[in-house]
Length: 223
Image 1 (cartoon, rainbow, N blue to C red):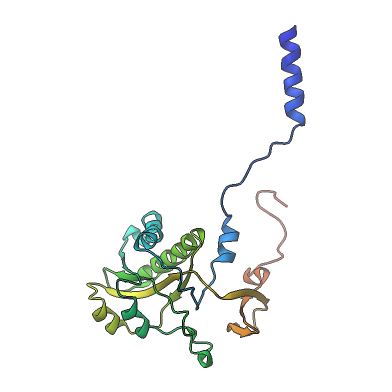
Image 2 (cartoon, one colour):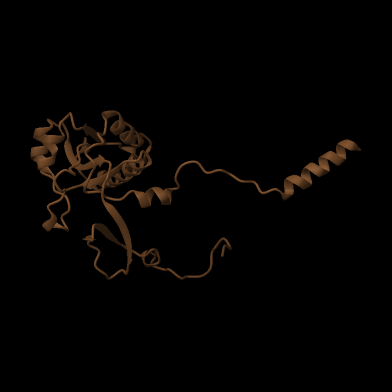
């Protein structure tokens, strides 16, 4: 009888208590908000080769078109060729009057994304997945990135003695830019701009991204 009483009281108490689950780490939405393109970096923070290896490490877990896994990565740090990369890249194309990066804010660590086969649609899909995933990993580590597609491919390949064709460059470091997203309509200008020291990035509103937004009903009965 005593056992039944204690068991009943335990069930009653447990039923009334709210179970609280402590979340560890960032949500995907939080990481995406933090993962902005920085065009200025704090040069007092030196990104190590080991940190770049951790960032590239996520690529061994990613999906790949036809599971080809044709991308390879060349790591560049301040002490291993950054000075060779900087003259060959262009940043901030939408703000040519600023001549970005500003003096003293240049990135000094890079991940050069290369391919083992001829570039194709599948390769480009893999490239996009890899770049975004590495950018998210960098943010998780407290770093920032910039995806760079404007660079002299031939001269970079020669300068770094790359055995493979480079497709994109991911700059890595401690970003210094103040960046804010600005909701915008589908037919509005989307070029980023700067005003009073803040870098503004227009983003089409979520509801405008869905072709059939506002359609009611759910095949599963969800509201």
